Image (cartoon, rainbow, N blue to C red):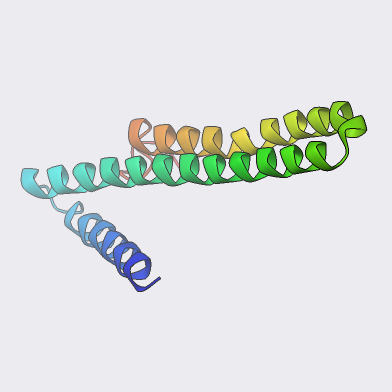
Length: 114
C-alpha cells in the first residue's frame, strides 16, 4: 500500500512540476510536460484495463460458482454475467477515451479553447 501511495505521489508531483515548467517557452520544459502527459495517459489506460480485468475475473468466477452450485440456473446466470461484463468493459474504454482526449486535444496546453 505504501508503494502504491508513493508511486501515485511521485506521478502527481511530476505532473505538477511539468505543468509549472510548461508555462515557460523553453523547449525542454515543454518536452518534459508532454512526456509526463504521455506517461500519465499510459498509466491511466493500464489502471483502467487492470480494473476491468479484475472485475471481469471476479464476475466470471462468481457466475461459474453459481452454475456449479445450481446447474438449472446456468442460462440466467450466464445472461446476467454477459451484461455485467459489458458494463465492466466500459471502464477500460472510458480510461482509453480520456487518455486520448488528454494527449491529442491539447486540453492542458491551452489550445483546446476552454
